[in-house]
Length: 321
Image (cartoon, rainbow, N blue to C red; front, side, top):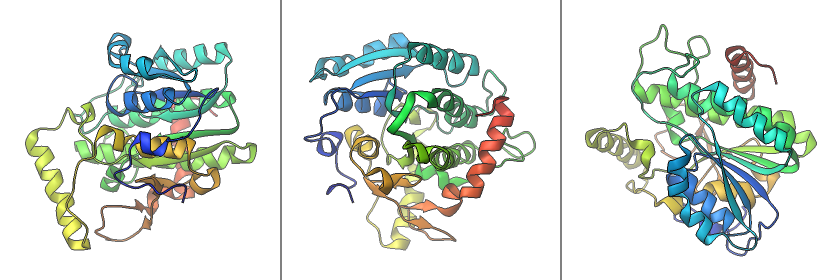
């Protein structure tokens, strides 16, 4: 275990005494919530943060605190990225590649949750297309900028427990669509992407991990009504009662971003590489009908499942990596 951290630890707790001067870090979704807090905490320790956002004007307004608190040479620059449009993803990646500056860490923080059925610009189901395929193309195109000692931190979620990926019907063309079922598929995909990316790159010293930030009030939940939220919390608490766990409590945004920065800059690479983490530790692997809310389902870190998802993703985006 890398440090005495847990569910209530904040980004400042985790990064206390950590010097990130000279580090260059890409954070997607740097226009609200966890993305802004992640960028702030890293820049405050000296990192040069490249924040990617779909709406640059919104990101400029939201990240003033990042610039205000940047220290020890830390800085923030913003780049445009619409993960729901692969032309935008490729343009963003091409510009960063042309710039030629290496990244020490990439944190794929951006995402959408529980949306109505919709399609990306390329025709993919919007949650799978945005949360997984957009990041799949972006990170793989940027892989040459990751050198030995670099890390990828992919934000997954306990929502992966809603469903495994469905590689026969990834776009809900023949199966019934449910907002949380689709979210679960995309978050399982995020975890599996980290598993396979880690396998492909660890021999050159580049590691990848997936993390669950916890339940946090952010813009991510904008498609959920108050009733939706209440039902979700009741389901969580029912599982907690069955397992003897405490009642659910929302994390603050600094607590929610803590596992991202822990996995990126504090935990040992061999400890978290290819793993799924939560509450600043590697999660227990669960199988069967275990009611515990914590932990990761075995299918979300299964190596063969990860390879199959990678191949299907290449087929869908029509690009091999």
